[in-house]
Image (cartoon, rainbow, N blue to C red; front, side):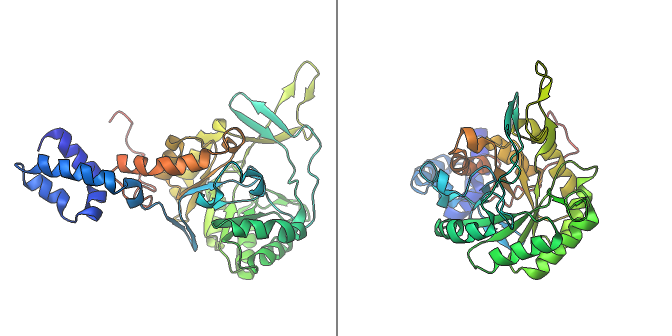
Length: 360
């Protein structure tokens, strides 16, 4: 078989095995007939849409998603705002903006500042509160037809548990995401920076709620892997890496900070290397499923997170300037998987060989 044909047979072997079991081997073993067989095969492939034969589904603990492309909390509103631009039912999962026990007006302006490679925000968890969410937003979200993961933030462990119980008992959501980057004001402890506090919070929420639990972790710690391990030991179905990186912007002419809250969270392309580092560090010490977040806007970004160890990804800042980015990435994913000779997302998760250089 000529080398070009060999490469193509190797590339499509996982898919060929589905269409015609034994055909990849037959093509290699029959040099005289392989050209004709492959010509017929190419014709069949045009009929059999290759994308339909690629398994995009992923499993994150008890949470099953139709594909690994999700939208991050705080960047997609309550989904209703994006419905005229995006077919939301195609998304692997939707995370509406974080909800709290009481309505919050958020921080003083300015709340957002563009940077050269990202966005600083200091929204302050502006949201309608749990009562309004349950009455006005959840029914619409549940009607979309995809996995709804509700992000919650409490001031105390007890408040987290109560919020999780309220949304979990509706039967309308797929999972709860604990926004553990929020300060525990009652004890002065940040759940996301203290492994013991994170463990207790996840364990308490898991005990009080039947739906899958995800913990969204902050990168603003010395060892994020310690916090991730604590979340996993507490019963988290997965961890979401990463939340924003603490930063600030300054107007030197006026000698003032540009954000009303002085500091904010940096997101976008600038933090992707940090997020990838965190995914790799967590993957190295625990098998808890990871959802990668941080600067994802292209199919290359998605694939980098998957091979590094993420089972799924969340798209955040890119939603602001390209609302259809998530559905485009879903469309592009099958071809990227086939480029690696993979017929499913699961085949490539965590396959990074960190012992080798790119040029080897």
